[in-house]
Length: 454
Ligand code: DOR
Ligand code: ZN
Image 1 (cartoon, rainbow, N blue to C red):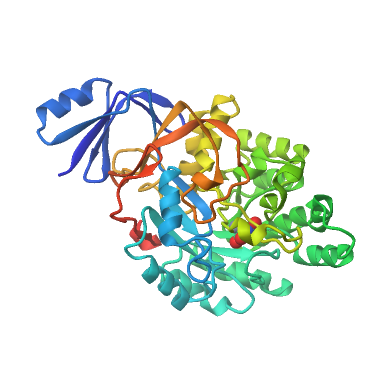
Image 2: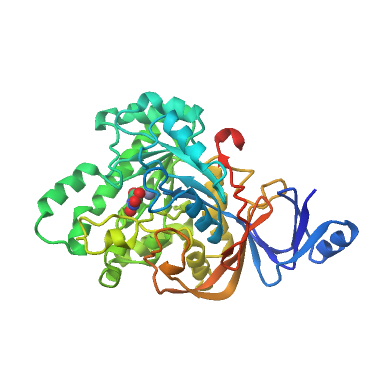
């Protein structure tokens, strides 16, 4: 029995911060002990190690439900090794991997290939999405049977150009996913609206203003509304990805009054950056859906604080700077790496009084685990849960630098930002995987999570 006690720290749940020692045995949380009781227990039980968490907060490891690990097909941007090491360094112990790889995860064979490639190369746990595309409705059930943890539908155009089912067939697609009981994550932007504006604006210029005009907020609101209507009509559990507009928030707020199984997420870039950062960041700011105005940002913060937004996820979408530089805004690839910067940014928000530590746990562990069926094993530090932990120091400061990141992208839109609050140790099932900004274990004991392994 491998046991240790983290003593002298503060344990954080989604509702409270408690001075307590955390007892871990065989990779699981064994219990919370009154301060001082951990040292007594260790003295009485030979083989129990004592590890000081003095001055630190102990949170459940983050569950990032929106990550593009890029393997197979785009390994020069990221792969299972680099992406899950980046996760561990960022305090993220579970990631859900998006299906817009090459090939995309349209059927069980593609899913099984991903699982086989991931075996033995993961530093944190990974679950895989299947895609709901134009031609694979007959594969949805098989994807679920093969172990997909959720489905993704791209209503709007993005990296990989995975088209959704025809407009008229969307009902059948939602119904098919509803039958599996798994969440359907929707990239909610209206494709036809975007294509119309892109064509109309072509040749007129490529300022950030043109880019925003090509992806109008009403396109996000309309696609969000459509996805919710389909969820209500079919019983599919819809989760709206990366909400970026005030209008999108308004649609979700109204829908949540009547429909309990609609959930949504936003991302740190929408809460931190605005269009005003374009002159400084250039193509590093190109992310889909786009980062917009301070008005949108304000509405998103309100929705995070009052619970309309359930989850904060990274949308970790690495691209190399070399792929971005010298390109027009239209031609540059879209997306930003985020696994190593999400927790520092959220902790900085705690220091600024915008969030509490329990909010962070609710938004990045507790709710993700509930929505994606990973609870009670993941998402909390209740006894019996996997001992996936992140220790954070709210005092330490760090300047975020792309060059210093483990992700293969070596790039961040938060370049040069100084934050206060950093993860200092990450444990996966009781094993220390990252400490003080360095990887510790190269054992790669991360597992592929499937609904059956919960
Ligand atoms: O900016 C984005 N990049 N948005 C997406 O929806 C996809 C992602 C990617 O895969 O690059
Ligand atoms: Zn994405």
